[in-house]
Image (cartoon, rainbow, N blue to C red; front, top):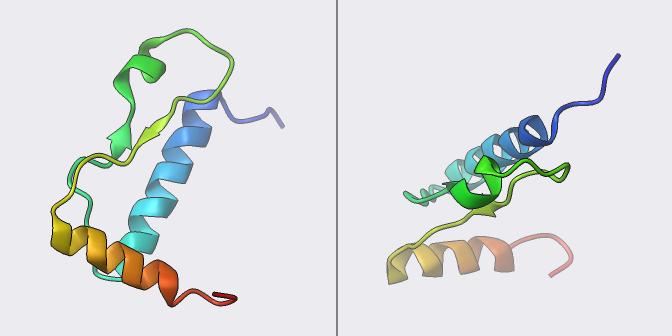
Length: 71
């Protein structure tokens, strides 16, 4: 079995993050792969761009993180 490609690693992480945020009712409209790092030919996975959000979304994200176990 071969190791996943760097872009597959980032895409999998991106989908996991999107699903985890959705479970808390949070949508980051700009969430995606960072195009400049995705377009390069590097052996490292592309960066994930969290993007911009409005204050209400930022507050919802902070509240969800503050409810996390061990907090």
